[in-house]
Length: 425
Image 1 (spheres, rainbow, N blue to C red):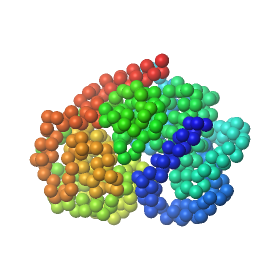
Image 2 (image 1 turned 90 degrees about the horizontal axis):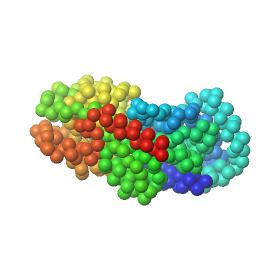
Image 3 (image 1 turned 60 degrees about the vertical axis):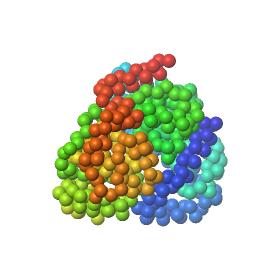
Image 4 (image 1 turned 135 degrees about the vertical axis):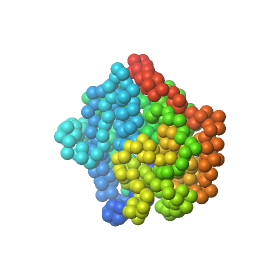
């Protein structure tokens, strides 16, 4: 119970964080029906009915989570980026098995889930305990309150699965998501080791959970420095995995035939259109590829741009490497995708106005990973080429990606060896 309350307090702080509030507002701005429904539900704030609705969300979350168990490692991932990380680790394992869980409304109809719920219901028949926990959040806005309710549902489900078939370790891809926090706390309850594999670059802007991880598989030293700074319990075994993919030499001094714009959440559409106009003026014949954030809920409406000549909106589900292979220069805001694009050989410039996050949230400009521009018209290719051919650039980049210039097979062997050491300790 101590772990449950600690995690709930942390999730509450994260989900009421300024960045999270902006993301919630962005989602609701695009979904008028959802916005109306939530406003109606929030009219019951403070009441027993509001609390009961949150309890129903706990039940829904139990049914949404599907996990078979039975592997050496039990993982959880919900987004494309997280799935990719889990698959990368799975493909690095030589002697151990990894089972990934899934979270979807479709899982409510999955028969083993219904059976699990029946068994859990017998054990947690005193539903008043959950009701009392949710009473603490009856004054909270509905979306953050639902995320806390989801955490509790996932915790109950993960704990039940692991008691039936205990894994030798669990693997999480986030330091703040409800499903990851739930799996961590369920594992701690059963004294099962926890492996952290962040799905994206860890930033100073989003503080990390004060949880202990038994093994952290990180892309580079920057991530371990941030975790050590913000997590007082981070006395963790660390192995560096590098950024996924093989190192490709940067393709400099070539004509700019296609410019890529890689977006994250909170896209500033006004600035995006301004950048498009500037690209048209600077590179008259260049095509433009826009890659939206992979999470559908935070994608803006690109209908007004999709029909314009020379502009391609990358379809949902397109692999990152496919889009990178099409471009000669990338313009990116506050997304960790800078690292993947650079590793695949495409030069990048940072443009702060592409989104609503704080300036240089990943520290890429500060740590001399990428140059910054404020106007595409002022972009000087000779200056960019000089930036990336500086002899110290690779050293700066390796601060984030310890695998730059190292064979991918060697990095996977390091991962496999570290996990083997953990599981046989």
